[in-house]
Length: 173
Picture (cartoon, rainbow, N blue to C red):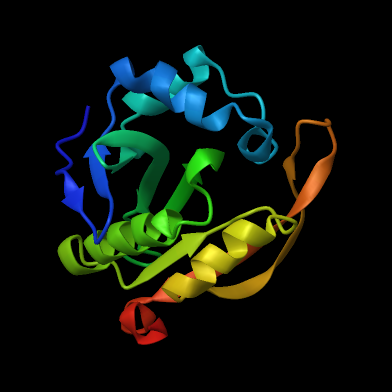
């Protein structure tokens, strides 16, 4: 369990997730539009994630309802210090700008409050919706990681490494 604060964005609130939220997170990750990018998640795997000391997990709340899941991890070695983000929203709220708001809100927290100078995110190279969202926040493609992650089909698929420097966060508009 972490002592992460609730983080308020423009239209979303990021509420720290607990192990009791595992079923809610699974419901967010289960629709085909989302599960293709988050294959193999189960209540047990999510309980492990939600109690991991290395991951900081939040429910994305809109209108007091859980609509997404976002998490971050930190690399604290001074030579490589940065944070990474993962996010998923239920397809019922796709296209409303909530994902962009959630990523921007967490990025502002990681940079402004926790002092990170660089953030990374690594969507599947084929996940055009996610890539557009991250670009709106200011993330830039750094390169393709070939055969990066095993998909639900059992094959390895390319990932896109994207990063964002602190000075670029609100320069994207």
